[in-house]
Length: 464
Ligand SMILES: *[C@@H]1O[C@H](CO)[C@@H](O)[C@H](O)[C@H]1NC(C)=O
Ligand SMILES: *[C@@H]1O[C@H](CO)[C@@H](O)[C@H](O)[C@H]1NC(C)=O
Ligand SMILES: *[C@@H]1O[C@H](CO)[C@@H](O)[C@H](O)[C@H]1NC(C)=O
Ligand SMILES: *[C@@H]1O[C@H](CO)[C@@H](O)[C@H](O)[C@H]1NC(C)=O
Ligand SMILES: *[C@@H]1O[C@H](CO)[C@@H](O)[C@H](O)[C@H]1NC(C)=O
Ligand SMILES: *[C@@H]1O[C@H](CO)[C@@H](O)[C@H](O)[C@H]1NC(C)=O
Image (cartoon, rainbow, N blue to C red):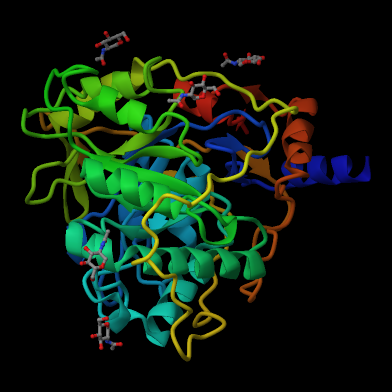
């Protein structure tokens, strides 16, 4: 009761309140909201403005407040609940962008590698890049993001294996990386953050590698598997696109699977009819959604939005994807309390001879470089977009802002920048998080369901 009162007082006392989504957890081969226990479907967009050069000294996609505010407002209006970011500079301050993303009801899937030196594996000679510096980079990236509750997971790699030679050389290293990332998270984070892999658009590689990365010992197995696929172009269909073959190949896969990149652009503008298929009855028991490639228009013409400097213009693909998302009815499934946890399939029968799992690199550090992110409280003013955004016809869109959704986080959210992720005051970790939400509901602070997408997330919208 004292806790309840405290919570009420904080809610009343604070002119501004932070908002947060509930952490996502994995049970068997599906994602669930750890508080509401609703199955979570990724409704996502890949986000790396600037492409592979979008990370460099002093900048990355999650460190520029003006850009994050403009883009997250547009992603929220689009109906997205997850973004994937391919590379970050782990020395920067990501607190504002990550807190804003959280406030907007969105999760992050983050790749830990970057195109910069010592920050990725060489796919043909992984041993040459298996260094203490590489591990320092990996641990530093985990440190910088592990306290943000809206981190859905880390990718250990993206398309590292993309041909026969890399398939012969790399899988053992990927498994070793998964092992050490998972152990580091277990040792230093305050919740289990899943670690997975994103596989290239190649039917042979994705099946063989997928089986290898997810078999046997859970300590080094991928927690989820992302598939990059561009098979469905224009107004294709479940069968002629190859989606039916893909779906049967991965039926009953042992960990959650989803499209980590999709959205073929050979027919432009894209109509996104594959979106309806992915979340529809033929696929939604196998796949947990996907991420459309990609937010920003780059040279390869996959953009939903054209950005330049401080301004942005919506492209027809944005409008079409928004219609496709609006049209979805996401399955409403709650985890049964009687669901038994299954074990991963055995590795026997797979070619493991070439794929010895190496030890950590010699001299590998036991911790990162010491930049720890933490969720911060944002004022209402900090949610209002000042950048100039225009629609497809060039008309200025006025009144653009991020709408705060998710559960209200009362108490201090100033969190200390410490080695172990501190639970930011009042926030529920898995297990006690229901308290905050039900208190807010019980006290009649004002609860309504958000957009269809957010309802699917199981988010509670608290209107102040
Ligand atoms: C990496 O492995 C290759 C092939 O196994 C070997 O020839 C080479 O010496 C190794 N390089 C290092 C730096 O260990
Ligand atoms: C195993 O390694 C050998 C020698 O590097 C190579 O010729 C062979 O193709 C590899 N087999 C597989 C299945 O990757
Ligand atoms: C998947 O599992 C279901 C239920 O356990 C079973 O009925 C079905 O045959 C399995 N499908 C495949 C392709 O293994
Ligand atoms: C909306 O859903 C229906 C039925 O699932 C589908 O036939 C139609 O193509 C969808 N429209 C859009 C714009 O995705
Ligand atoms: C989802 O299902 C639960 C019952 O399992 C129900 O109480 C709830 O209203 C449903 N939500 C939506 C958005 O349909
Ligand atoms: C937006 O502009 C207003 C008025 O100039 C200013 O008060 C506010 O701080 C700006 N917001 C951001 C996030 O820059």
